[in-house]
Image (cartoon, rainbow, N blue to C red; front, side):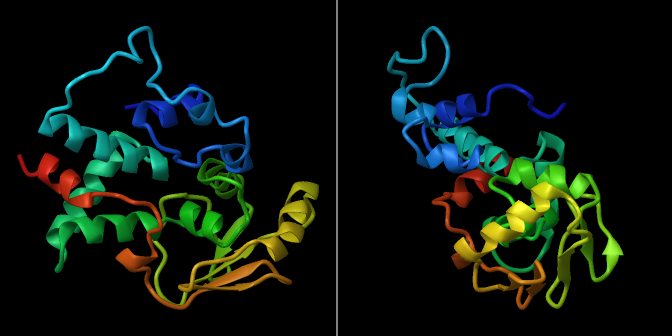
Amino acid sequence: MARYTGPSCKLCRREGVKLFLKGDRCLSDKCALAKRATPPGQHGAARKKVEEYGRQLREKQKAKRYYGVAEKQFKNYYTIADRKEGQAGENLLVLLERRLDNVVYRMGMAASRKEARQLVRHNHFTVNGKKANIPSILIKAGDVVAVKSTDSEKLKALIAELETKTAPKWLDVDKTNATAKVVAIPTREDVDFPFEEQLIIELYSK
């Protein structure tokens, strides 16, 4: 499936929850969900009975859109998570948190994961001193993510904003040099979005 290129706010309205796809706009009065909290489309406001499958599908779509991954890629993450030791749902969310674009977002270098993905693809970051322009790279404990160059005016502005950002405990961010060391692999407790991951596992287990 091709990557979604339509209006981001429609995705939040469809899932009925803020997915924080547009950075600061999601926290302002301009948020589309705050203005119109109904699914998009002609019949969006109609009440519909949601079956168990519908709940499972919506939870999967919510997670997929929150992290900005394609359908096939999300299914591959589930396959890896299901083969690992422990609970498949927790393993899945941890894998998604370990993506390079998510790490860039979590360290405060982007207002959204979409912006973080774009910065990574444009060769603005390194991992352990090596070029890293693939957003889906999975980071490991001990890895160091750094800005490759600060020549760009946009990057200078983003670095200046780091002082106002708070990073999760599994990242040690050097705000002066715009680097982040992964001090530990994130856990389920570090995922600050209220996912019901068991519904996703039930969907894929059928």
